[in-house]
Length: 392
Image (tube, rainbow, N blue to C red; front, side, top):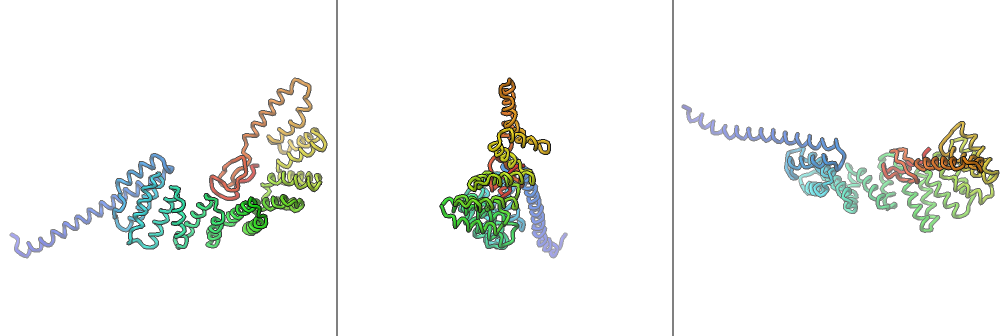
């Protein structure tokens, strides 16, 4: 038989034992659920965004974890990961609802609120709600933890809206904060403002933007080409020619872009010999194929097709290319075969070569490899400024 003191002690210990068992079980259950959450969220990053597997993972996590559930100190990290998962799977309304709910929690620190609001801004951006996204990122731009990242997202928004003035201010702020090499980006944004000024008939304002662009990036070919365009519009032929030739020292890969404009300058200066000598120089120095082809055209006009064919044929042993072969045949063989039965066959071969040449991309991005037939200063794939160049 138990005495009274022992019964009293058991009465006190039983609730404590029950509470301890409940606490251990809840800890185990919470840890297990958190582990399942981490595994499920981690799996989503093995698949592309918006994939069926991504969506299934989001549903799986939603069953394990409802917004507002409290799992302890690591809850916020899991909730932010869940919001990112919703966004990746295209369930933007759920991502926005979750992040707005988290932002309303008064117990969060300022740093945690900033993290939540940044994710909310990304939700708005993905949903195309650019005004809301801009407001969120503008408020975060002065924060210590998400200032640079917010400015970068604002820059993306302003570029997509073609608001070049605001984009330029963002790029200047990023440059002031030392977040990477932004000089090339800033130079191109100033060039965009210069082009707008040229379109509005404001050459002085355009020239100011271009001078600032070259101050930011002395190797900005685009700024030099636009300055040359202004000089051509004002019939300052010698100045335009000097500007165009200076591209050689900025980036010789862009020499094909200056040739037509340079020809126009020298035609107005009545100085074809200097133009032809420069074409020969840049071909010999840089193997710029476009220079050789244009020089052949000038020779054909001055001395006849045979002279052009002989010039191009002399280049083939050292550097044969599809375009050089095509142009050589165009100038020489069709004329030589006139009056014979081989003309239709030869012309058929030439047309086939022309078709092959048209399949080649004229430009390529040196950053991501994107290929295109026209020059874009802003790569649509990697969204980098000034990385698309004439293809070799």
